[in-house]
Every structure is written in structure tokens, then in C-alpha cells.
Picture 1 (cartoon, rainbow, N blue to C red):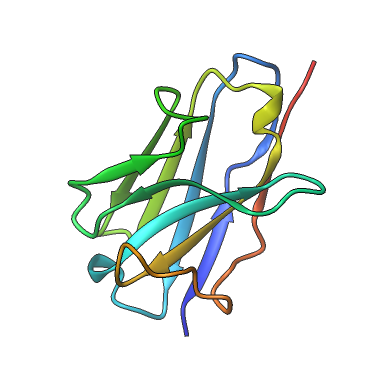
Picture 2: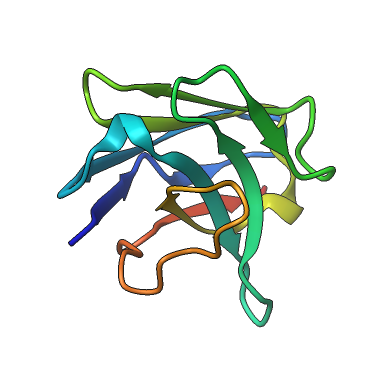
Length: 121
């Protein structure tokens, strides 16, 4: 079973930066597309960014494009989300997920505990 552990969240002021990590185990990490999602209070979980199995292809939600960067280190079975120029609207619990195909829905059994990101004064 896929196991994903998110970390790196915290509280930052608007304009600050955070780097999230997602440590993966239980599957062939290098064969999977990795995605970051977030869920703000009272809102649905939304896709933030995705990265192909080799790291050569990335996609971003319009709301974070130009500010966030997704990357991966297949040797460490870890995917990262570098978040710069953070805004209060970025406040959410951030989760990662793994899929074999770009179009796959997230695996409902592989969500980790998430990591809280709070952006406020």
C-alpha cells in the first residue's frame, strides 16, 4: 500500500516561503506521477501541482503558477513543493498523492496526514 508522509508546513507571513516534502514508500516511486493537493477550511481539496515520473513535466494550478515549484528526487523517494510569495489564500492543509497515469484520480487510501500551511500576519 502506498504510504505518503507530508512535512515542512508551518506559519509564515505573507510574502514568505516554505518548502514542503512528501516522503513516499510502498510502491515504485520513480514510475509514478506525483501531485500536491491542498484543502482549505470549508473547501474542497484542490490540485496544486503535479510532476511526471522523471521530473521532466510539471503542471500547476493557475492560482500558484509562478510562485510554487514542484520537484522530485527519485533516489530519495521524495517529492517537494517550494512555495514562494505566499498569500493568505494559500492557507490550507497540503497533501501529496501518487498516480500511475496523469489522468488518474487520487488514491483515496494513500493520503497522508497532510501538513498545515498558515499564511497570516
